Image (cartoon, helix red, strand yellow):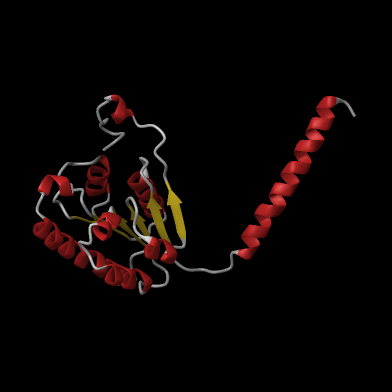
Length: 203
């Protein structure tokens, strides 16, 4: 067997083995229910990934709810697109901006609790196929919200409802409850090199 044929044979064996592993994984996944996804880590792209799932869900005609903690003072491309092209999507924003801007713990806690009441209602709504809780982890990290109350609502949501939680950290209890946990690592960021945030890329 010459080298090209040998290379092709080795590639074929490798792909056959990989296909077998993939097929076994698909066959083993028999549960049909919503999932809880936690997107965490100090890298860029957690909210972007969540909104990608929003677009995917809307593409199938599913009903979606979005709650944004922290963000909401500055417009984002996601907000503009949702409000202009998908007004049927309920998008609620805490609207206080970042905690280091408000510098008022009592006001931040009150805003977080009011926003969580909206999230809690969405988590009880079985018509919502997907709920995004953007930057929720910070509310837990700063202890603006009661962790047990948050976890209880996530655990008791409708069986077919999927939830995406974003933000750094989140705690071990939330990670244990989640079905999927992905950590986005910050390897390099343009901002640290003095490059301004880019409209349509960063916000």
